[in-house]
Amino acid sequence: MNFGIWITAGLGLVTLLVAATWWLTSRSRVALPESSQQAHSVRGRRPNVAPMIAGIGVLLIALGAWFAYSGAGTGWSLAGGTLSVKTGFGNAAIPVSQARAEWVSPTGPYGLALRTNGVSAGALQAGKFRTNNGQSVLAFHYGGGHRWLLVRDSQTQVLISTPHVESLAKYISLRGTANILPVQHRQSPTLALLVHLAMGTAVGLVFVLAQLAMAKRVAPGLPEKMITHWGVDGKPDGWMKKQTALRVMPSIAIVMALIGVAASLATYTALVIFGFVQLVILGVARLMYRANSKG
Image 1 (spheres, rainbow, N blue to C red):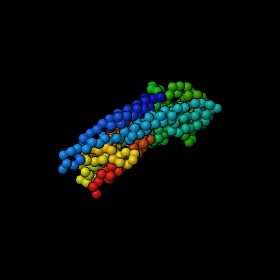
Image 2 (cartoon, rainbow, N blue to C red):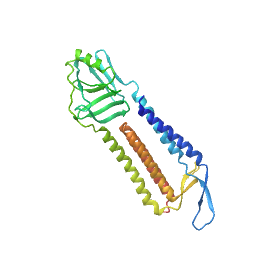
Image 3 (cartoon, rainbow, N blue to C red):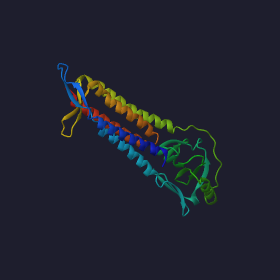
Image 4 (cartoon, one colour):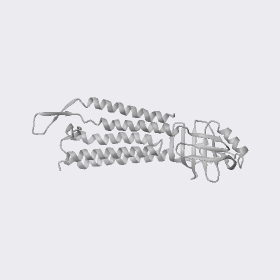
């Protein structure tokens, strides 16, 4: 159970709390002018977007649960002369009699440069990675202060940094095809964090700009009082001023973009999930604008 799991699940619980608060306050009445020619006002409900917010909260909690599930039972073990490594995003089995091993530096040629399918959160890095020298490896790192051991045979490369890795290295040096080689010290920058940050920001920015562009394009054809919520019977039961309504969906997209950037630092899977959520939000905004369009 690493810190990233608690952050994701905590964000989900906070989102559910926001949804519950929104739903309760949506029952309050607001007065809006029915038209510029009429002096009387109509009373409607605040737009009830609580179900959508609650759905996002459930998605975040499910993502945290998935992180916890994918991390369960992971690690390495020795049995029957075979080194088995389970990362939750890929497994490997290397016969110790065919294994070669060497200590490597986390900032050297075999430092992790790019995560292609896995998770990096708190003290855990697990899954498939690209190294600084362009090699593809399966990595499992848990805890701090442990050396990095590269174990490979003719087909598989595994990077391990966990408690008891020294014992594993000694076992392989005695039974493998080669002794443990000296640690490599050549320096090379790690790009994984910057790449994930750039991709998360790019995806979020695309959907925020799409929301702003769509709101600007449809604004001239919308009434000053917009329907923003419909009941289960299909009848309108929520309204909002046009300028306010045009800010709601872009604002939601901005919040989701920020959450998506944070989640993308943990795994590309989160980036895909939040991209899908943004696409749903964009579709909801389009349907609302079409329903209110004068044309």
